[in-house]
Amino acid sequence: MFCVRENPEQTFYWFFEATCPVARDRDPGVQFQFPEDFSDEESCQTLPRFCFPYDIQKVRDGVAVQHFTFVLTDLEGSQRFGFCRLTTSTHTCLCILSYLPWFEVFYKLLNNLADYLKKGQMNEMKALLAALYKQPIPLMSGSVTLQMIPYFIAPDPRSLPSIPENRNLTELIVAVDAGNLLQLETALVQQQHTYKLDTRCAVLTSCVHALSAVLYPMYWQHIFIPVLPPHLLDYCCAPMPYLIGVHTSLSERVRGRALEEVVILNVDSNTLETPFDDLKRIPSDVVSGLKLCLKRQAVSPGCGVSRAFLKAQALLFGGYRNALQCQQDGEMLFNEAVFLEHKSSSMRHFLQSAVHLQFFKQFIDSRMDILNKGKEPGDLFEEEIHNCDTTEGEFLYMYKFFNFSL
Image (cartoon, rainbow, N blue to C red):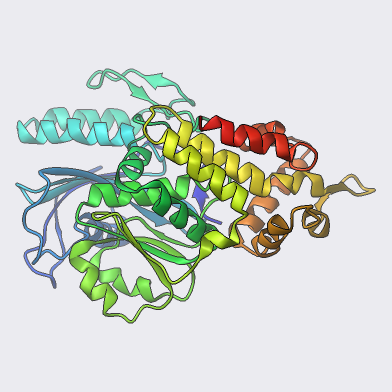
């Protein structure tokens, strides 16, 4: 199971400035790091290579400054995020490693650190890093006042991503139209091999992170590489499902690996290549409702896009609660046969394949774990299920789903 670590001990673990290698067969250098005694040899060798995820002989100029994020998974299955600020003029990249998925917070911090570097204010930069390194992690939606930063706000994990506040979702909606977005999401639901192409690392990783986020309450359980460095191109040949971002400068080398049955989105041109017809596997009423919502909500600020995906997930999977059964010893079990007894033939057909998907199994296991501890799941998905009785009130909820987009 891949997940975000709960209650990490520190706000961040390592900050460094990497220099672009002079040739393909050379590794990036590290000019500065904090803490100075950071000694994780594997991280020191591998992480700087993620800072320049393109063909350095083909890409010498580009966007002046780009923010992007790579992801590493530790032995416990927890994701570590490498937040990067790439500067074309100096061919350097600032990177900060953290278990906290706080994109906007760390991008702002990297801008502050870059400003100190540009002005040669090394003592001020070290003081800021030291203060943040020792600072306890703020509570949900809490703020911490630091002397060098006006505020440091922890995002609320219970809130839906909104436009334009959430950079990842905003970039995705601007770059990809509703039709391609639907096909991408259904490809992920069916656990297909999927990769994205773009000339901008910032847009590329934003789209990959946003696509993963709108699967909520499910979590992508397979290979997840928001931006693929050149030395890991063989991952595109992996037999298991993957969601990968690839810089356009590496596209010829990727396509030369004889890939089979892969869904490819070129974000630059908003064009999609797929050998599948995944949309036909999803109930048509859900697809129609979601497509209509996306077209109407994409141009509006707020959480309308995220809410549309959540409503679709509630229609597809919310019936799991009707399949919960209490045993004589009080233990709750999930009855798969009851779950599949859906009055809609198209929904039954979809669910018969969905129950074998890794992220659905993980979802059910996590729900059973909560219930058998005597607690009730209390997230946004459960709230949406209460708005959608997937047995008796499905027609009414579908009406609301379509009406939501108007």
